[in-house]
Amino acid sequence: MSRYDLEYRSFSLSLAEPLETASGTIESRDGFLVRVSRADGAVGYGEATPLPGWTESLADCEAALERARDALDSGDEDGALEAVDEAVAARYGVSLALADLAASSESIPLYRYYAPDSLVARVPVNATVGDGSVEETVSAARDAVERGFRCCKLKVGRRSVEADVERMRRVREVVGPSVELRADANGAWDYEEALAAIEAFDEDDVALVEQPLPAGALEGHAELRGRGVGIALDEGLLEHGVDAICEARAADAVVLKPMALGGLDVAQQVATWVDQFGVTPLVTTTIDGVVARTGAVHLAASLPDPPACGLATGDLLAEDLGRDPVLFENGAAVVPQAKGLGVEGVWAE
Ligand SMILES: O=C(O)CCC(=O)c1ccccc1C(=O)O
Ligand SMILES: [Mg+2]
Image (cartoon, rainbow, N blue to C red; front, side):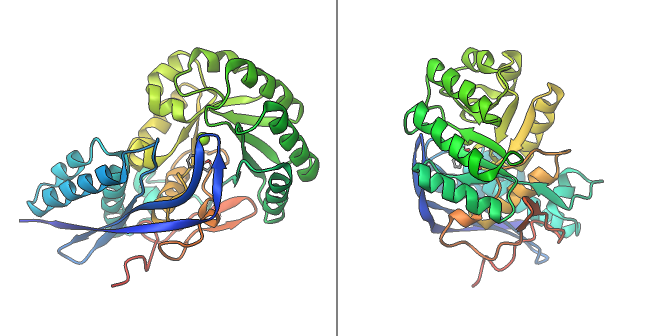
């Protein structure tokens, strides 16, 4: 007898404007909305939105969701998560739907399912600024600060280091000294370029650079630390895992993307583990729909004292799966306190 039913529907969401990054341009996000329902009428939502280079393909994601559905149909609950074990986006979709259902049944917001005794009103967030021209970059950063953001992350690495240093310098002039600035090179630089960028960024009080060197580099990242600008590993976390990074002392922070790690439960474990080594966990999305994005907000809310997280990516989309339950104000995401994820109206019949 099956206790749960799993259904999924495909969607395609275009970005308001293509997001330029050093590892490619993101124009749309295609994936699957997942719904798990229990015989008593309780439901939970999840979202599996693969991103080439970061997760399984769309086809592999769908095949994994189909296996999970079949496992649940035959009453095999453990089998459902085993079926998506090798497909991180599908695993996020299924595990999020099950967690949303479980937290909803207990009438607690999802973050308290992971951090039972906590009460968290808001988590700080960064604005995400694409790798555009100086004018585009300055205008996007100025806009973000006018909307209340206190931290901006600039995508870098598509042009020369000098050009990126110029972009950063102009942004610092415009936003003033108190806004935190970060960069994300998505692995674009070699060691010499990264060193030059970091030394120049330090003069503009840049707090952090994500993935200056390719994912494979560990020693190089370790060498780049301690120069005033923090080093965060993103692609590198997926390539090496936590232990190798901590052992090589290769990072000040690691970037946790639930879609790329296979779910909030996995990301929670990674966060708790890296924290033991003094490495800061930093939660971001993969530019997802509202269901996956809100899951990431709950993950950040479940962590003690998170830094500004890359969760304010909803505005990058031209359309969404439903209404966004997360309000952004004064540089923070207001954490939904309704039961479960707090996402409604995404599965209109
Ligand atoms: O962290 C953010 O500000 C937003 C998320 C982001 O930058 C991103 C989005 C999609 C794919 C990769 C990345 C990345 O952090 O490298
Ligand atoms: Mg990154």
